[in-house]
Length: 249
Image: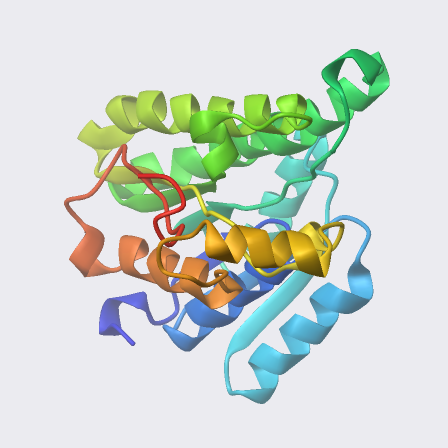
């Protein structure tokens, strides 16, 4: 744990999922007070929150529909009132769809876009004023390898994750002069419930297609996030880093 991290506040969206939960627990272990945001999965998020507290950390779980700018503002207001301004923001919340692009409805498109992209935008916009005032802050956007290279039958998901990559690069240039770093983590195939639709045979094939011969874990992503928000990552911004075992190079 870095001394400067102690008592600073990290907010992780989508903290009820496999990757979000791992990131929240890692940041808590690093000494941050951690806010775990969830939308519907209250029990899973509160279980992660309880585990952090049981380990001696400080954690708070909050329900918020990040697609709503007003709900995001209310969430940040509550955090600031209880603990203070957010120092580290991890935009992890996201949903995926597997289907032909031509079969998508307008409502389905809006749902994935608003969750994966607008949610990150509203959270970042609300977090930035205090970061700019402090001349310090860290924003991490969780994208995907499919945002880098695209995936058949996941056109909408790939599009939103690609948008996060461009958002990262542009925002890093804009807020860099204020001492704020913005980076993007684009994981490869990770063993999480989001990939539960894949069969055992599919996972074997993906493992065989990965040069390291393994499937990633949520902790592989969490460890990278921990590094990027630490003092060791202070000179890294606007970068897209992909923990994928060599699946794409």
